[in-house]
Length: 80
Image (cartoon, rainbow, N blue to C red; front, side):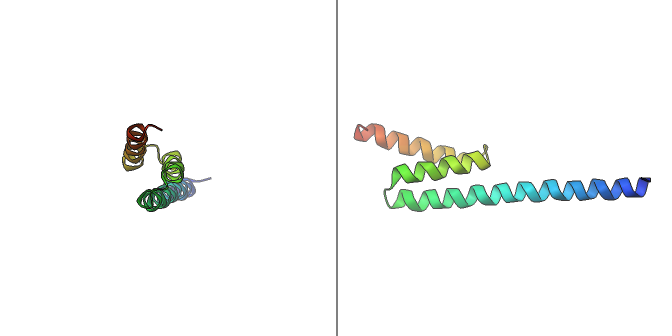
């Protein structure tokens, strides 16, 4: 493969990498939003499941981690 072909391959791989990361972030946000909807309905166990799914897709999703902490604090206050 010549230099031009290698450059094209590099761009293609970069595109795939960027696309993949975008998908993970989209999936993470979807789970986070679902978790928030469930939390507003006071369905905390289901909300935590969604927040954990968001963290699985994006371990740096701080809002999902914070939401799990809030639910844990609520459960502690309620004695669960």
